[in-house]
Structures are given as structure tokens and as C-alpha cells.
Image 1 (cartoon, helix red, strand yellow):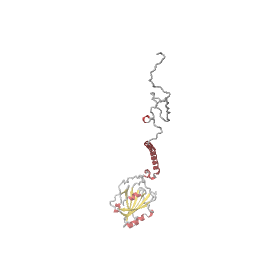
Image 2 (cartoon, helix red, strand yellow):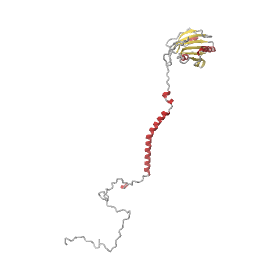
Image 3 (spheres, one colour):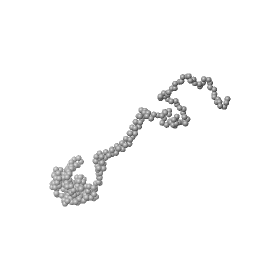
Image 4 (cartoon, helix red, strand yellow):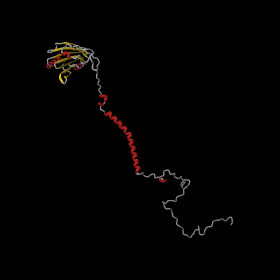
Length: 289
């Protein structure tokens, strides 16, 4: 065999040899939509068109890409709605509670009645100690029963003198009695009385006219005579012994006057006290006869 001759493997008889007289098989055209034959995987990880293969990001189950427009399930929708409702309620709570509290405070101060303020309606009462006499009263051991019944002291005023008088017409007995003491103002400070020129007044105490009559009727008539020149009383109240009313007590004196007068009856006894206006009520109510 020469060098120019190529060697070839022997072909079996009849194999790979086409017959031109054999009819040609029709070629099937690809059906539209039919899947093309899969290409062998490229070890480099690139697609057949040269783009890198998807690394699986954004894929769904089993590595398949999840459709972007896939509708959520009913359970997911309900969870989303509940989450939105919770966020809405939390927002309203955070904003609404302070607003309601501020509005309530404003309404409280706007609608509160003026007299509900404790500072505006509170009344402070100061009770002063009862003043007492600083000296001993006159000794009346040998005096009549009426003189002995006179109190020795009335608050800070003390019995100083007792003199008989005939100025009480029809009286069984009559006396002019002086109680000495310093007059006090309403706050407990010193307030010396100024005499108005009356013979019954003293600058530092009370002059008391005391008389006793045979019966209560004549005593009442005598009391009217002792107050005839005083005008209308500023106030009148009952005199009681226990639960029994035994007479009346009347006060006289103009507002702002330095002198006041009290006239009262107690059964058959009549008394008229003239002294400092600031003390006349305390003196007469504390006299005890």
C-alpha cells in the first residue's frame, strides 16, 4: 500500500449506505408552543444565551420563581387587616388619651362653681379666752339677800361698790352698783370706754341699777319706765331659768356709739346696766341674775 492511500475501517455491507430510490421521510415541523429540547447544562453556570444562571434569589418552592402578581390568601389578608387595625388603635390611644385629659381639666376649671373653691368659702373661727377679773370683789356678808345674790365678778369686771338708791319708785329695795374693769375690743385688745356724760356711765366699767318689786307684773312696769328714754331696742331675747321664761332682756344703743345699755327683768327683779358698748352684750348675758 502506498503512502498516499488512506486506510479506513471496513464498513459492513449495506450499513450506512443510502438508497436513492427509497422514498424520503417527511420532516416534522415544530408545533407552535411545543417545548424545545432541553439543552445540556453548562458547567460554567451560564444560560445558552450567555447570561449567568439564576442563583435562586426570588424563587418560590423548588427553585421556581414566584409570580409577582399572585394574590394573597384569605388568611394573609385577614392578618394584614388585623395588623392595620392594631396600629390604628394604638395611634388613636397615644393621641387621644392626652387630648381627653387636657379637655377634662379645662372643663373642670371652666365649669366649676365659684363657691366650690375651699379657699373662698372657708371660715376661720378664732375663740378668744374668757377674760377674768384681776382683783377681789366687795365683801357683802352683812348685805340683804338681793345684794348677796349679785355676782362678785362678771368676766373681767369686779364688784367695787354698792350704794342704796331711792330713784326706783315703788321698789321694795333699790341699789346702785359699780363693776370696775378694763373694756376690751372684739379682738381682745384694750378698748377703754368713753363716757357720754350720763350719770350711769363710767370710763372703765358698768354702773348697774338693781331693784326688786313685790311681784313680776310691777317689775315689768318698772323696767318699761327705766327704758322709756332709750328709744327702740336693737334686740330683745327671753330670760330663762332652766326651761322657764322668767323675763326679757333688751339692748339699746346706736351703731358706733361708745356707750350701750341693757335692761332686763328676772321675775320680781329689774336691772339696768350702762357701760362700754363693746362689752354690754357680754356683760348682761354673763351677769347671772
